[in-house]
Amino acid sequence: MSDKKPLSDVERIKTESRQLRGTLSDSLVDRLTGAIAADDTQLSKFHGIYQQDDRDLRAERRKQMLEPAFSFMIRARIPGGRMTPDQWLAFDAIGREYANDSVRVTTRQAIQFHGVIKRELKTTMQAINASLLDTLAACGDVNRNVMAPANPALSPVHDAVQAAAKSLSDHLCPRTGAYHEVWLDGEKLDVGGEEVEPIYGKTYLPRKFKTGFVIPPDNDVDVYSQDLGFVAVVEDDQLAGFNVLVGGGMGMSHGEPATYPRLASTIGFCKPNAVNAVAEAVVTTQRDFGDRTNRKHARLKYTIDTHGVDWFRDQVNERLPTPLAPPRDVLFTHTGDRYGWHQSRDGSWNHTFFIENGRIRDTEDRALMTAFRTLAEQGIGEFILTPNQNVILAGLTDAERDAADALIEQYKLGSDSVSALRGASIACVGFPTCGLAMAESERYMPELVTHVDALLAKHGIADVPIVARMTGCPNGCARPYLAEIGLVGKAPGRYNLLLGAAFNGERMNRLYRENIDEAEILATLDALLGDFARERAAAEHFGDFLIRTGVIAYVGASDNFHVAAA
Ligand code: SRM
Ligand code: SF4
Image (cartoon, rainbow, N blue to C red; front, side, top):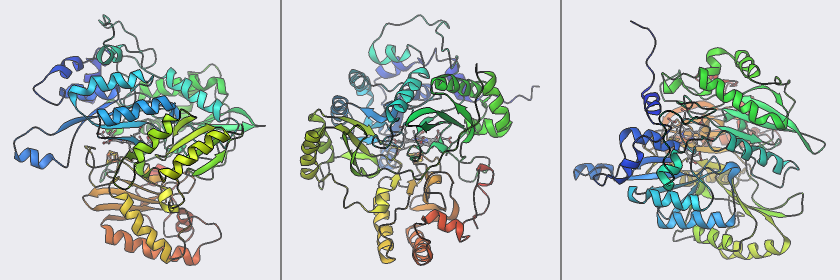
């Protein structure tokens, strides 16, 4: 008997899928259910689509012997988060017509639609395609949406880095014709095993793969959390090249110490024109050596920890015409967005809008979706989605700025009243759509921030920015392990509290209190924030203070993430 472990079932589904076709076309026309076939739920992810059901309605539907209230989440692929005003208008219309009257900016600079029902899936996909954006590879075991620095005001090399991100996104995009066939009524190819995926091969990657570009000193894309990171090195206002980082990742499971978040390791430096080749070398190494037997051990971070960073660098270098050079020194100062108006180096203006947890919809208090539609109708500038779930309107002339200002005033879009904590907080989607949520996240974080703001005011430190992030489960979609205050859902109303990450995204936090409710969270933070207010060194950040005073033991790389905090 062979002692070789069997491949995970998703490997079978990919192998049999005829390059991601599966039976998706049949599933879509099956009127007996609002769901798609089980195997197709895995394949649809590669097309940017997740089958979900409304978890608020689950128990009631079960009682009534009805199938769950199935609907679909669709995630677009928007490299660097850049959209034209016309694309914004198209997405706004899709959100109102086919989704749940909202659009959701994600932590990877994309947009998600929730609540699309099966019979409208194809029309929705066609509407997205008509906007000249698509959803191919927004999810699935492939390279996902490539992230790039959002704030155009800060660097002379912003456009060059955005261009590199777009080029890499195209380079790593699957070549299958399945997307056109299934969603766009494209010509059916005879794929009797003939269609070639030049980079991925027949079974794609062992697991999802994420790439981000960043320009120091801003670390807005949280480059240490990416499977593959490119850190721009700028010399004499020119892009000299990139430090190459590999093996970052946030996902873990409660109670399974073999799973852990990990910071990416720096393996070298490459010239700007080598980016696509380097990425291909990293991706194909992961394709060939990643663990295809256990999806909880399949991310690049585990491949690297299994074989070692030096081994991995050697593998990458063997696949390159020129090996990586030694990395250059870089310095990061923060991970957040800068709200309000800023002038770019070319003289144009950009405005960063605070969007609480990325959700754009009209409510009784605020017509946020209408406001952004009205801004887009001006046809000015471009929209940039940020990794902190916010939106920037960029590239405006002085006159356009005045026009935008009038709308900002009319719709109360300014962020003056947003507290320092709220402005530096993000939360994942969680309930009711996420099938993996254990606790509320997007729907609860605003309320918790209000309570923590009251504590900060009480201690006289309301203006000190603290990075706070919440997720409804340990998968880490809001990168909570890189937050100074991280809250990770355990059960309804209960969270793990993690503390001590760096303000600039270079050090993870660690578990401080497990499975606590709101009262315990606030009592714990009250005491620590009080100490911070009294004993803080000049300009010291909360995470650094907790490390300096020994409340949290220093966490370096992943190998000691699960070691007790203090
Ligand atoms: Fe995520 C799964 C939402 C960014 C790690 N993520 C999910 C799913 C699709 C749940 C599922 O598998 O059924 C969530 C859909 C919820 C919903 O109803 O919309 C979901 N992830 C999100 C988004 C929308 C969170 C947000 O509030 O913005 C983000 C979409 C980004 C995008 O546009 O592509 C999102 N997810 C992330 C990030 C952050 C990042 O990439 O910078 C992470 C941590 C980084 C990483 O990948 O290590 C992340 N998501 C996960 C994981 C854990 C992966 C792992 O290695 O263990 C899962 C679960 C899985 O893959 O099995 C997951
Ligand atoms: Fe869902 Fe968990 Fe991701 Fe939140 S962190 S969106 S609960 S998978």
